[in-house]
Image (cartoon, rainbow over all chains, first blue to last red; front, side, top):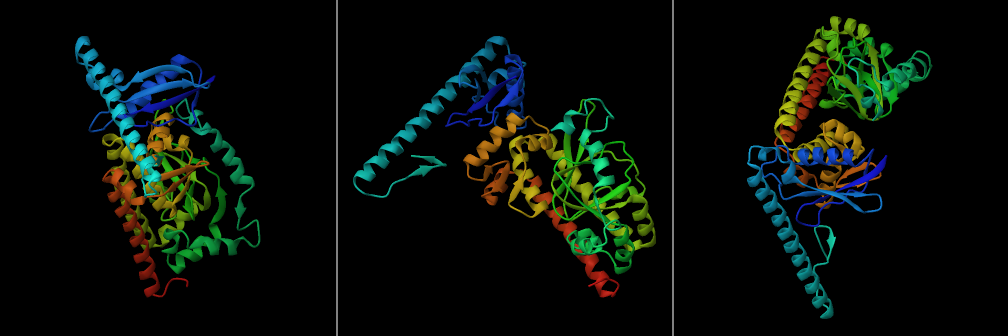
Length: 131
Length: 289
């Protein structure tokens, strides 16, 4: 048995799995990830196809990535070509959102530094994340 | 949890159930075996709303038959197919009724706290259980042999009616629960579940592991871990040492599906049902102070 961490990348900071799950091998981790992605998408109005699970081992090494679009059952009827296109789009959408989020955080941080230098009040944290 | 894993074959009794069977026979606080126990039962008695609503006559008959014990989390009270031989009244904590599938998977159908009782349908004629009853949040519970309760219920028409009405409310609750499980997202259900459990135990701090939560909602622990992480990030809850603390109830309500409002209303109706019964009992003067 070894410990696998299932971290979520959702286009913002994502969510880190703090506990991890003990599983026999990589295949079991793959199956687990598929189930988690499926459950997170189940009955949601806007299917978060651009999300991705990043599976890491106990030494924080990347084991594999699982894009939600790749396991989205509502896409089962699409041609393989179309499906690849949707998956590709989802990847790009996430990358874009992540960049946007990072830039936004960077702007906030710069503003905070400027304000501090002028001894003015500034935004110290946003959504629980320290600026 | 060991008790869920151990039921891979249908009909197999869970380990905790067997252990518990021994524990109940040997180590339980009984008001007969220990001389000072009746006082303890009396002091706890009214913290269960259903018991608090009883007439004086029913109380007199019930108290000598009641036993009391503290059940730890995970204690299994009965399995699907079991003949229910005991009826349980929580004074705190919470019991979950789970629907168990052949492959060992289980999902929660109802929860019962100190507003109600578990297994009482046996005295209304339904002897066999269709669900597994598990102590989900540890607490003190009174219990009584089903045969003894049946006798008391037969002699107290009001009590029987009261139980029937309460059973109907529970039925509506289970109805809402099953619809919710089928239609709503895990995210919404998790929020609803935290709120609903907090109502049941009347506390903002819930001693629940993610493993337990996952089993109640019928999803994988990894899913709960990520969704609870999101709720924590949004500042709605805090997860510390296996305990959930509600930090923003309104935020959780917005995240939960509409089922929370319905289940909350049913919970209030249960309370009113008991309060009305208690009031009518005291008005006619046949109830202890």
